Amino acid sequence: MAIKSAESMVNQAKSEISSLSIDETQKKLADGTALLVDIRDIRELKKLGRLPGAIHAPRGMLEFWVDPQSPYHRAEFATDKTLILYCASAWRSALAAKTLQDMGMDNVAEMEGGFSAWVEAGHAVEDP
Image (cartoon, rainbow, N blue to C red; front, side, top):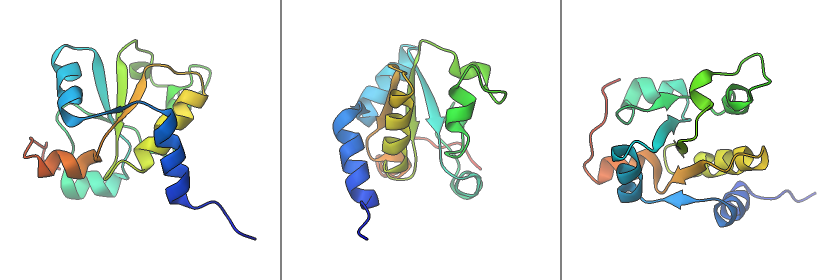
């Protein structure tokens, strides 16, 4: 039995979600209309740090933390701000953004290139 590849799932998700460049992300952060959400594994955060001001929501808990009916709901996700998700290279964040969109959220996007692109562009990172 052939399964659908992760790459094809990512490509499909990217065709259905909003992707923001690093510049667009920075503009939304500067005008106070966005919240950065780091969905990487805690080990990645401890090793590499995170983007300044980002909140951590591990991929495995994101849906539960966003859902106001969940016993795990976190208040910071009940916002009109655009939730800009990022991971290492924008694959997991694309899938996560698609999932949140499927849950009915319309204020979600992913950051193109993820953490790696941010670092390569020379932008600040909070120490682990």
